[in-house]
Image 1 (cartoon, helix red, strand yellow):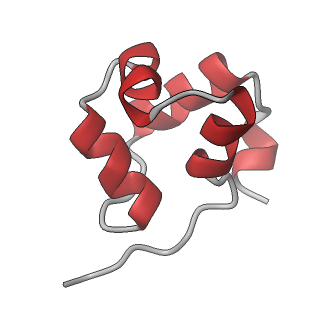
Image 2 (image 1 turned 90 degrees about the vertical axis):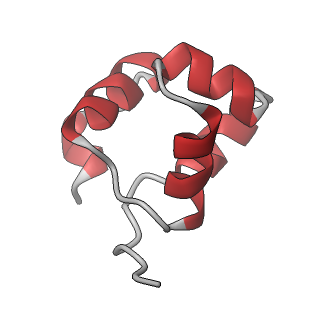
Length: 67
């Protein structure tokens, strides 16, 4: 199974800092909890849409996402 390169932004860490469950995070991002789980575990990469949603929902800067 292919693993994607780890993103500079750790979605799981961001989620845990907010004390959100995966299901809650998925709802806020507009994705399935399965997709969020796959991204957190590195089984799937971030889509452009997810990057935009993570930046908006978690109030992170785009440049921080791609350091």
